[in-house]
Length: 104
Image (tube, rainbow, N blue to C red; front, side, top):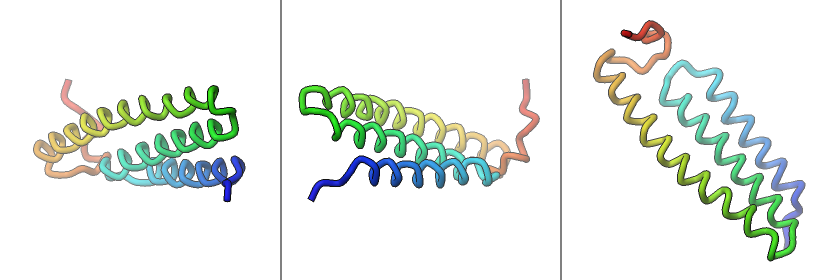
């Protein structure tokens, strides 16, 4: 049974909306980072969903782009998590309101 591209795009839209809502509504920087990662994964799902509609020779690009995006997202998650850990060590909190005025 083959999934239609429309269903994959609807799922990607729902996941992207959840990630966007989490990133906007939370003050905890860890949740903001996870919301952004969820939105990035939804975009990758959308790429793969569109690639499934193309012939096999042409769908390779639609499957390779998410591979590079996942690699970049992994590096971004590592850097973001390291920043959250350093902020927690310095401020004893990961609430975004606590460090709106950073030292210059």
